[in-house]
Image (cartoon, rainbow, N blue to C red):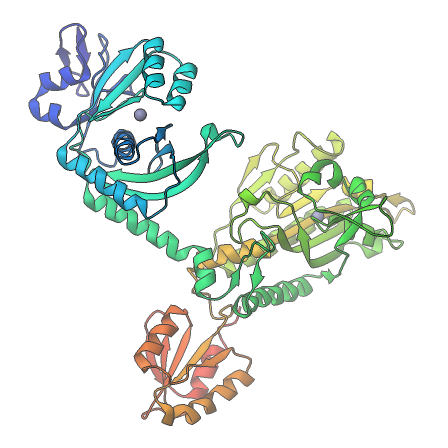
Length: 614
Ligand SMILES: [Zn+2]
Ligand SMILES: [Zn+2]
């Protein structure tokens, strides 16, 4: 038979030849370095036979960044992990161990729970295996033989896997460990130049919470030590930017089991919060919004009217009143119903429109405990919410206004905006004609502004920073008196541009790596007197800066000046003023975050700060 190589030459092989046979026919070096063969574009174990006429290509240890090459390496690493664990923990049962993005894992049922510290011991055992060297043998057996084998070994998970496996059953053996596995695998462990166990987690067998809880050990492996180091470096960088880590280090907030998913904001975090609130208030005022405040608690009928009860009930917190056990209440998950009631509380004329109600209010959403994640997924949600009530003719102008507002915010935070237009969901409220109209109106507004966007068909559920709605005002029976002296239903634009403030601050922390711009920084300037003798003079420059509205603190000389400068860097403070023998109001030593230093007068420095607002 013949196979076709990437340069289109044909390679003559005996019938039934495997990938490895083909590699050997080309040369011993290739045979040694090959990790996989691609036959007809699909990856295949080197031990499997090729077919006549197939185009083939080899992946070798030199393809160290190729996802398929990494996949096979990490899959083999997972088997080494299982071998080590079985040797170290007699009685352990093995479940499954696939490669995943960036690494691999293996799930085990341990007789006694293990802990993070135990990973070191397992890591050492794997390193011993690597030093000894392992070779993988593949065999194919019948389903019954496989079952009998794993039953005899006391491996119930493997027995279950044999029962549900499709196609032929194959086993891979290295050292004293045989695994039920489809492959592919490396020929031997030589290409695994770096392997690191990275963590421990709980995982249910087959991802099913009614099944036994297993212990998942995570790891990763690479073709070179440098690649592992670069990977660990990237993980470390992500950890450094993680808003939960920075939130604690910068003393911004904490989370507690006393109220899951509801952040406790510390004074530093509250500064950021209030700056965003000030921004919201200032911009709303400039853009013609009126601030309102509506209750947190409504009777359930209100949510039946709004449609939330039908579609969003699972995410709501219900409350009963002692006076009327019949009448159930719920904490608001969104502001819309309150704003509808507010609009409906008075006679409205076309002359009142557009009417823009803004409210930054606390909302509660009953998210599953397992899905909560720092500030990014919370139960206590605060939105920079607004509802614009307008006529059909005013829709486009109002959407333009929201788009401008959004662009302003994205520019301010140096974020790149991407626009998506989500259309009617499958589980929708309201008639198709209304959806036709509102979808077309949004598309027209985007088109006319020359904004590029992606259509997300069926994604228009309750979320979305800008929503055009013809349905909810109808459900609440809202009307206004038109110029024609007859009643019309207003359209409503729902708009929450930052989304949830909790989530937005989480994103900002990671976006800036904790180094907030001057106007958001909890402490904007720290003054450091070099010694006790400089304290009084240093305090004299603090007062005028505080009077000008800046957040200034003083690093008292309880530690060396070097330590306090380092501390200010870790606190990511934008400006540090060092005050020693040579300094005076006419000449201050200013250290800017990021490294630049200057010597300038207090007046000069204050004038510079005045240019750094939002
Ligand atoms: Zn496997
Ligand atoms: Zn709304």
